[in-house]
Amino acid sequence: MYQRILIPTDGSKLSHKAAQTGLELAELMGADVVALNVVPKYPVSYFEGSVSAGAQETQRLEKLWAEKAEAVVAELKGQAEAKGLKAKAVTMRSDLVAESIIAAAKKHKCDLIVMASHGRKGLKRLLLGSETTNVLTHSPLPVLVLR
Image 1 (cartoon, rainbow, N blue to C red):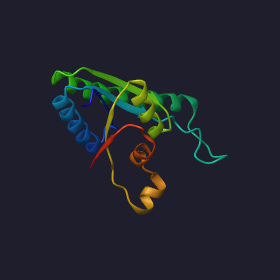
Image 2 (spheres, helix red, strand yellow):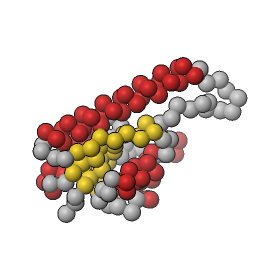
Image 3 (tube, helix red, strand yellow):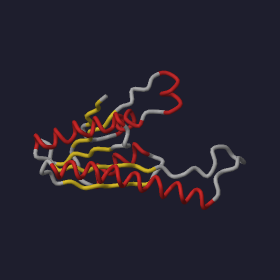
């Protein structure tokens, strides 16, 4: 049914749980896996006129985030390959997480996205937003959401 499954992961416990379900589904379907982590860009400043980290600190943090992202997707890729699945590890740099997930699904010709939802409600959802909701709203592909 599905040939290639995109599994976006942020490395959290909940995301790991969703990724495991995505791997199980891929194994049942004989589908390829694309493991994705979207790395945010370090903000220059949160508020106009406020002081941000220096250039060296910004570079250090961005490098640290990129290394963590690569480790997260490499681990997921390794788990997929251990199940005998063809897998690819992908990282992207963007503050537009939902858009990046959808773009990666299109680029890698995925036909399903399997991701977690943190289930935020109320003020937390308003302030932090929901990347999952944005993917659900804008994706032309089916999206399996797990909590």
